[in-house]
Length: 80
Image 1: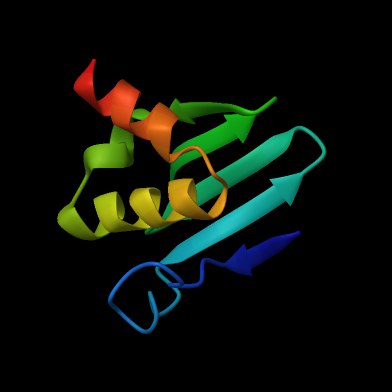
Image 2: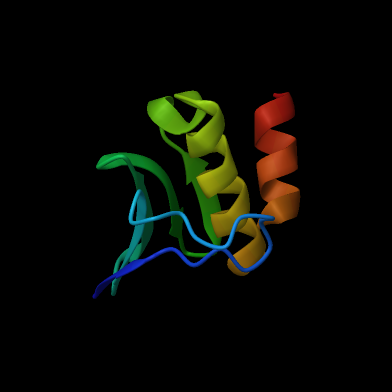
């Protein structure tokens, strides 16, 4: 199932269709501007090479991580 990422924690009201989430039996995948930027597989966050593509993409990733309760993993990965 693919759906638009809602802006629940971000100051913006919407991401205007620029971020989509694909929920599959294999994992949850985030797409920003049609690029796979992050995924959660087995409870483990994986940042894809384009996660830092733009300020807006970083906002999408941060929102995704908050909604899926992997924000601590995100903070560790972006430091390393």
